[in-house]
Image 1 (tube, rainbow, N blue to C red):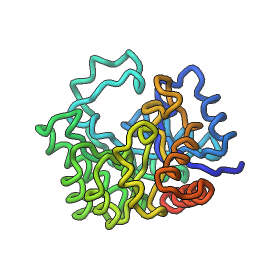
Image 2 (image 1 turned 60 degrees about the vertical axis):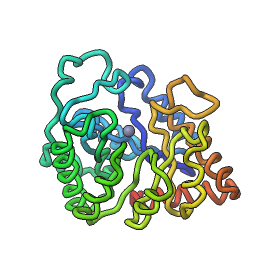
Image 3 (image 1 turned 45 degrees about the vertical axis):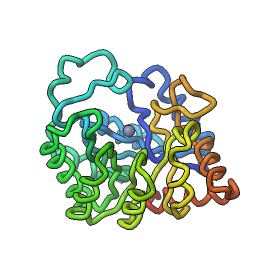
Image 4 (image 1 turned 135 degrees about the horizontal axis):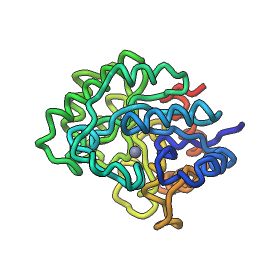
Length: 272
Ligand SMILES: [Zn+2]
């Protein structure tokens, strides 16, 4: 199988794909797009590893998303209509459970983990810190990069990474300005961008200023569908639209940008 693109962050294990998961993955692989299936809690981390084990060109990340810690944000695209009654209670990070999953050779990162002060309030800071630090320590132990979810919390995240992280990683759905971007780049973290860049110019400055070898492409599917497919469910097959947009923003040849972004993914996630 020949891959030319990499979706650094997608969720094809979510309920949103129950009806056609295999077709969605095959469509992406046929278009030369490899996939990192990112877990958000125990169930979706386990199913990410299972999908990766069953497909060449598909890998997995394992971790506990900050919105599933102190409280659990219920997303029907992720979990369906069932289980809403459990949403007042989050998951306590169980290092042993994730360490066991991390034994799979197809596990390429720990996450998505991080801090989110947007969807859950700052009163949950203590548990978010504790859960994030435990995952940084697991990543150190497994010597795997971190897949970071950070929302309205870049300062605290940078502080915790400086204190605890011995590994590098990727800042998923980077949404900060150039001042913040520079600090992650100095720590050696790549920045990844979704289809959001096809309909807003907010991130153009960061995309232009960052070194090309520190950028990654991601869909965050099923969310954030790029133009011209807005309003539909997203899929990894749309990665070329995001890479095209990055090339256009930077004013660089598409082939150069595509080749380098794919090489970046192979380097960051040590893809075999
Ligand atoms: Zn995600």
